[in-house]
Image (spheres, rainbow, N blue to C red):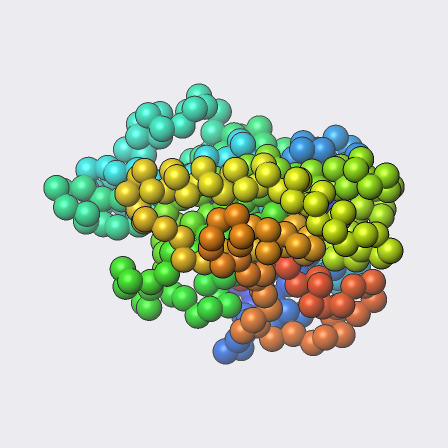
Length: 361
């Protein structure tokens, strides 16, 4: 979305500001394999960010500072991301032209596809296929409301940092997944590759990105997340916020397993509907007939029974993403947290995807 020149350095800091957690990850790119050298995670109070809107700036700014200090990160340049209904990602077909000419034409094209005033958005694009026949090309169009991007960037500036890149959460997830599985431009051209749904379940927003190889077919954000599960667990099981939060982290404690599963199944309906609609849109666009596999990430990926519930409802295999696959790190980096690295891992997907961004990319 926004890209400023990096100072030449071997590492990149990914700063993932979620509604409930802030994660900071620094990755060193100097070796053959990316290596995590610093990590910090700080929990925000529930009133700091509500439904993606920053309600208490000071709490968020202090949270960012604490997270960076906790991680021991001294760099002041970060890569961060936005998501939600104010972000639109859409594939469009345009007359074939050079990238420099497309830069000008994309603004006219965007007016036809974006439900916002063109003057109120930040625009970016990527040519996915330079020639699809009939002298046309396929372009990925990305737009985000300027107010949201500016607010996000200002928060980071007020935390004494500089946002060198403002990305989109879904693309950070895809970037991480591709690195974990060795997918690159050179080896992802086969049309026979699996169609994979990447679903990142955050606190208030779930990012859905359906890809084949390294090409996105359909991308959207839906306004549901782990907070919906917490609310229903509190209501139906008569437990407090902390106990409900423990449940979605995978710790049922002494709660009845069957009752808990029933509540989680009920709470998953909005997510199920969002996935069904995404698959329908993908089919209607003629991109693919089915999804072969779905990979869950984010804090919601840890919700007990959810993977099995989604697999049963959609008839597709759902798995939980391991963002640390193919990435070096010392286990000591993750010490000092209540949860072990296996349970923390799904939370790291966006942050790692951001930190994998190298200078010039």
